[in-house]
Length: 79
Figure 1 (spheres, rainbow, N blue to C red):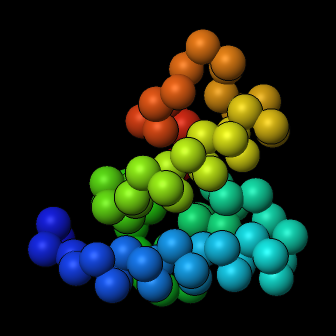
Figure 2: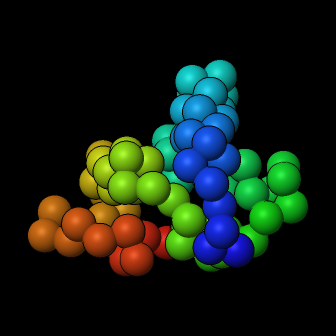
């Protein structure tokens, strides 16, 4: 739902960051892992991702060549 409070979003960012660190995953894989673990739909979660996490996802995509340099929009990512 769009009624997610900022503390929930902060927790989401922290959880994703923890998964990246602990499992040595990129951000895209970490988000998919988080969704599978918590029984969330990836597309629904993608709509809630705050800009601070979006930039990490986009950088991860560029580093893994999933996102062409000229694209900077998370909607182009395969998540």
